[in-house]
Structure formats: C-alpha cells, structure tokens
Amino acid sequence: MSKFFLDYNLKVRLPIIVFTAAIVFAITYYVSYAERNGIGYTPEQPIKYSHNLHAGDMKIDCQYCHTGVEKSRNAGIPSADICMNCHTAARTDKPEIIKLKEFYDYNKPITWKRVHKIPDFAYFSHAVHVGKGIDCENCHGDMAKTEVVGQVHSFTMGACLECHRSPEKNIKDFSKLQEKFSIKKGPEYCSACHR
Image (cartoon, rainbow, N blue to C red; front, side, top):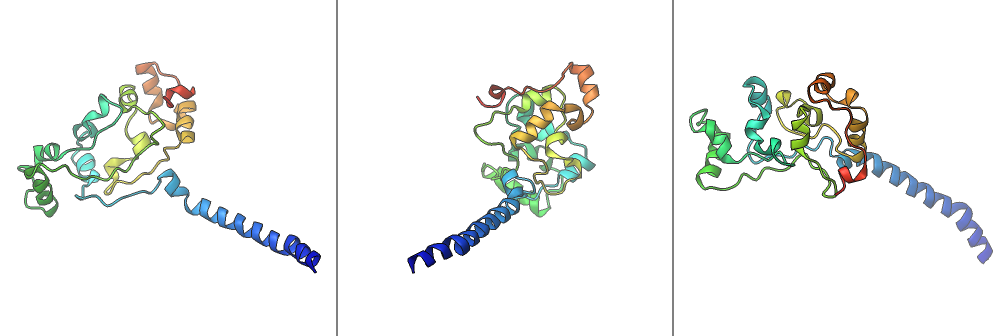
C-alpha cells in the first residue's frame, strides 16, 4: 500500500505541484514586470502639476525647477520657493496654487513622491549626462507632453548598458552630441556604476 502512495505521489501529485508552481511563477513574473522596472509608476502627488503646461506650453527649461541637475548626481525636486518665484503673482486663485502657498507660508517641504529611482547600489550622475548634452527626454520621456509624471523607460542595468553600448540608437540627436562633445559610448566597466 505504501508503494502505491509513493508511485501516486511521484506520478500524479509531483507533476501537478511542479506545473502549478511554474504557472504561478510565470504569471507573477509577467504581472509584476512593470512594477519591477518601474514602468508605468505614476503616483498621485500632493500638488497637481502639469509638465505639459510648464515645460510644454510655457517652455520653461527643466533646469529652472530641477536645479541640481547640472551640478550633482540628483536632479533635485523643486521646493515651494522655486514655484513661488512665479506663483506669488501668477494664477494665485487656483486651488493647487493655494495648496502650494500653504506649503510656502508655513515653510513646509512639499512631500513630492519620487517617480524615477535607480537602486541604491548603482551610481548615476545627472551632472555627467547633462554636461555631455544628453537631453532629459532620453530617460524621462517627453515631459513637455506629459500631464502627470510617470516612469516611461526602464532604469534597469540592461537599459543603461543598452544606451551606453548603442547611444546612436538610444540618444536623441546623438550625432550632434558626438561632434560637439566628442563622445563615443558610455562606460561599460562595473565600477562606473557600482561604486
């Protein structure tokens, strides 16, 4: 009788368990793909902000609000002070500007939710990339046409290496940047990003 149960377990139950585990893994892998890569992540922000209006219609340069982008590894998220440079006079009666003014008046930081993030174990410098003339759009998408910010490109190691290995396919106006900055390809050695 125990041989019957052993044969039954090996011939029937084990394949069912392995098949079920494989199906669950496959479904989980594909369903969580966007979350693992961050693509599509679009959190609700404390103040509704339209990049379409500011960067698109009004043509405000990214670096006006993201002040650290030329100098540091982080682009920086705008404080209420930067927004209030314009909004002490412009559209002060709008509900979102009223919320913004409260942050400003009480000297409270705006609790923006970070959208674009690379892992802590990887080093990335905005200053290096911006200094070489690489446009923000290459990694962040066309913000001038974006109402609500979300991650549109993958920030995985594979995505970065693809760009470093084939910049002519991945970087907008790469031939012009090659002439101006005499850049070829990005580094591929481990210590460039893993420090």
